[in-house]
Length: 141
Image (cartoon, rainbow, N blue to C red):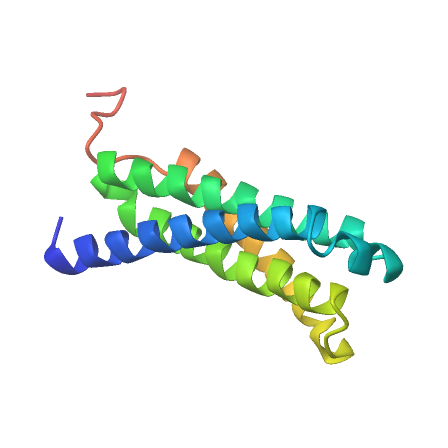
């Protein structure tokens, strides 16, 4: 793996850690310190949805990046998938967190953009799964 690819992988793995930490921290914050505020605003369920999606995609990004370490042929696509999921977490969950606390309504259209990034990442996983691996001998050899 080139040093540029290694730096990219290190940066993305770090971002996974930050995203996972943020999801757990914000989930706990919503369940405890912000609970009454979120209940009054009727946004507690939205807050939990944001935290769950962020955590699920941080873990998924971590898994696909660990795959990239083992399968260099798919590493570029795996890094793109992880990037989509991390950006999706920022857009989807970040906009929901802000809206749940009374942030500007103009953030509303950002949420589906994050959802599209999540979906694009999952499409990438499908492509990664069915894409032939050049390192694997074909069945006809």
